[in-house]
Image 1 (spheres, rainbow, N blue to C red):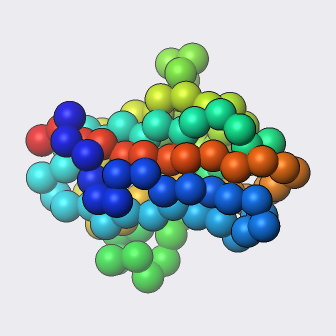
Image 2: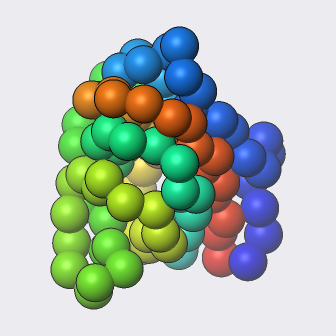
Length: 108
């Protein structure tokens, strides 16, 4: 899988529930894999846009347990078959402590 630049983005302490990691997505990027490292105590919401990042909605990603969820509170590998998104982001919607790194890779 190829990495999308920037390869890794940080959700940092101090940014709290306004911290996010976001990437533009090209139509050739069919299979997406997001890696969230451990260290954050909070909730990350998966969000996608179909209008170039003007508006975002929660999207379901396959979580490590094999089910589909719109949020996570744990580290892991999360996958999505791109349904036509132009942008994808991991949005820290609740925050208690810590920080984490988020990276995104794709396959065509």
